[in-house]
Image (cartoon, rainbow, N blue to C red; front, side, top):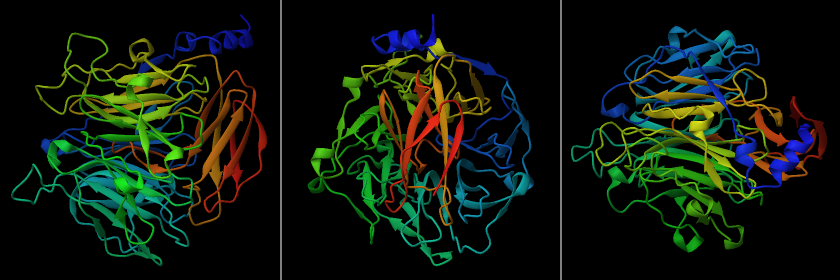
Length: 503
């Protein structure tokens, strides 16, 4: 069958997941295990970024009580990684990491989350790293499990937020003893002393997002009610001036879950970012309501079929536990799918012990169908952090999953059919990666809107070109709304390439 007829048939029926069923091959993974006591029941992240300039991203893996490790990318047609951890990154107590160019020098740095003092490591040539010595970053002994960053107006350094979990120093803990979300704001070319955002409710994921398309990012915090017990909820902090929480009077809908991870993407097509939240028991899809004149998201979990609330195969019918979540078009059909890493906290009897990861495939009607078993990524390990990223630069999104107490897993995307486009944004320093920009891509299927952010997920971050599935489209139009509001022109581009848009 000709490709255009294949896609016409798929896109005109509700059978899109069958037509475009993704497939992955499990590849021998790096020898690495995230492990440790109760402080490492959570965390277990991965950072994906290119640190040697060859356009193939490396992976940096949290180890818990094991040393963290960096694996250099040697992939060609087949995924291949080799151990290459510099001494400066052989760190214990690491729960996760996020790549970010803090000093805007074009070399990727790392924000490293730890049980203990967090670290900012400056990227050097050929995947070497050293601590920043001139930023005045003064961290404390926290149990850190979340990170996000944004550039506030007129600042040369990014504003950094670290989400902390249980306050281990509280003698009345662990229940009801939650640490704060910690904010580091720049003061010139250095960081001012840290600012605690109180109350804190044991966050496991945080994300700066310009939810209102106003040019200002606010900080969303997902909290684990297992430890805050009562009186807490999900949070949205305004950082415009002195930080403050949004309230129900402003449209924020109070919501309490066992919050583990945040994913953000416009899947409704209105240009505003929707969110997917992982939890114990079920996962929540919330669609932004632009008519509400405030930070209001409406639950669409059951309407769209995204609960992923129990194991989708096997004999364990107890509730699932979700961790990392990420929107990604794994079959390049132009519709964002959702990957969810799952796994019991440790031995919680009320939750499933055999809990396969989920890959929720979006259909042409906008709902989602489970597809991980058919795709070959339904691991039964106790998964935590993950990254869906193009690891061998072939235009198809691969998968790396960090598991608690068992080895990391690596899956190569072997799907066929469907075009793609990858887009890199650049601008003059500061903020050379244009964090806070909105990227719009238009084909006959409609407009895909992508907000450029750092944060979210579960202890895992990616610095890479933005990947779009195009389905049957062989061309697309793209434009950028740059930080500060400058709107670029629409540009026509050919499919199946990586393009760079410069401000």
